[in-house]
Length: 324
Image (cartoon, rainbow, N blue to C red; front, side, top):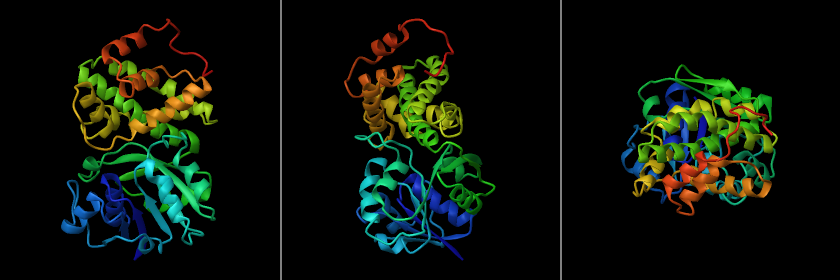
């Protein structure tokens, strides 16, 4: 039987382990820190609110136990990733394949996950990133979807796509490693904005948000020397239904509750990513009106309705223009 490892037993990570076990025929070794509530729940009950672990899924509370396999999926909070990479670098990882299934930017540095792993792990490893739409709640009901896999190594993309494709998830080859990571991270930010509009019951503006946000995101991608058109692919625009409209979206729900003055109480990756975007936008003078307005609301506690109105009172311009 083939073996694969998973680091991170949250909602998405546990599903990816379940998917690899059920649809791809792997024995799955899963790791999380032993004090994690997600890990404790799985250890004690073999299930979480979304799925039940299969017989070929084994839980481990020590990191070396899952590093014996050649293929490792990582799905943890983006702000903890650098620390994990420092820990991973203490072990022999030479030749191993890593699939990064997180969508966010590091808050202080505004760096994406592939960058961080290359910086911290000084060994010859193969890295790919996973992005695109899909919710655990839909997947476990058998509802199919599509994702994109990208890497700076064509053979690494090929490796993951050939080994993880199934009738449930259709994999596409990515062509813009930078753009796909930034687009995936920023769809969480736009999800917060959509949730705020839901909380205000200003539903009519969500269409305008969907139309304008990819242009803004494309501008940001271009700054990092990616292809701005990637903002219209699976990693960003293709994930809008799951992030801007779905009741399962943590980022949308965070925004909705924020607008209503309620506490969400769960991780919303778009919040630290928003701060990272603001740092770069200010430093490099990148025009990011949606993100700038959102930052004022979330971090500076500006009046929500007035801030949105001010954004729409900006100078009138053509709908489409050069990316510059």
